[in-house]
Picture 1 (tube, rainbow, N blue to C red):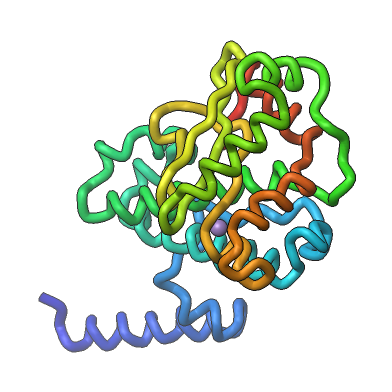
Picture 2: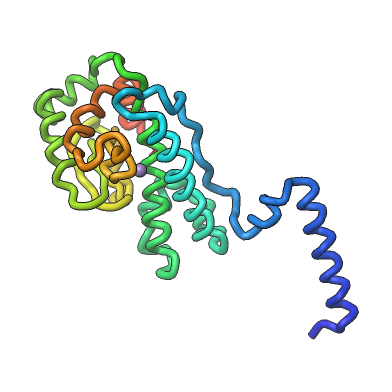
Length: 246
Ligand code: MN3
């Protein structure tokens, strides 16, 4: 047990540390001491929030990236704060080991880890409207595995419309380059089954409600205008090379 002197020394030392933290990093950071800043961090948007206008509005993008995605990152770090061994894993590996994650944090890791992975992919595969259509090996795979771009869009939009509540629609890719459609609820991802995601669309209301309200089908249709096929082709090549992450 601590002696009163020892205790007051520790209190004073603690206060001094706090004061140093306050002066060095600002008041907000000092009071956020129980919110770890890593190991996972919010990736920068690869374009400005208004770059996807008019199909996805700047306000939605700003909130979606800066608030929603940031919250997944923050809550994932919080869940893993006392689990250094798990916090060290790459995200795509952590998501394949959910059954090894302690039950007390498993749902938090599933929802927030999945959310972090899904959104990190999502920003990458979009870009300003008017980009190029798929070509080369990617186009060939879409033609042979998904019946061509038009059929893919039709099936993808139908799968997105069918998600009850919140979720995602994905096209997965294996190391042989084979493509498949996959819809998931909540923030689940094919990564949880050890698969790789080529691209996907977020059908949570937060992704479209400000502009499209209840008209999810209109959002699904318009979204194809901002798919960055060049980025998707890079992910396709990475999948075949075995280097594609989230
Ligand atoms: Mn989202």
